[in-house]
Length: 274
Image (cartoon, rainbow, N blue to C red; front, side):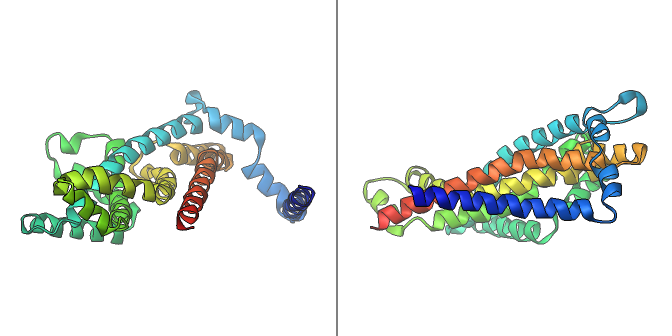
């Protein structure tokens, strides 16, 4: 206990000293005052967060709410679409061959093209087609659609790896009990696969949360766009600092939660191996 407490105290002290040295180096830098004025002015940060419609300043805080909404909708759709793509790609029946080819092309295409280009293609391409209903949606809808299409390709590979990690003998055992192919997939394979891939899925969704800021290229006034508007109007980068802090408040706890799940999964696997 004493040794563990001493190690913890040493770790905490070294961390504080290291961070203190970084802060000191920043404060002593020749341009520190100017950087603090443009990036860390509390008055500007407060105004950027709250916004001021009378001055044409969008609220970074309200923009972040839109980012969260886009993230939640995208995440729910990605989980469903990616699972469908993964299951289709794992079917070996000749009936599914055309769908398997399409799913493979889709996964390769979406993983090969940067997400930003997908957003541009959908956000500006679909309206240009002038198709009734499809071409009259808001930029938020196009942005979410682009994020879903892009991230579903990555997440489908995570699902596929999880499904392939389930031992074949468990599938054979399920079939010997009278379960059909789809029943074995639903009741035996998928529950184990999903439990295995939760940590990597959470890592993908951390990236998804950050990439909602890319939708700003379509003119959507979310966090990043609101911060840019404040910077162009007030000649201050404090809005960007506020946007970064808001994203960190979400992504850091999610990252720590992911690490905890990974550690628990590793401990469970080690316990099962003994």
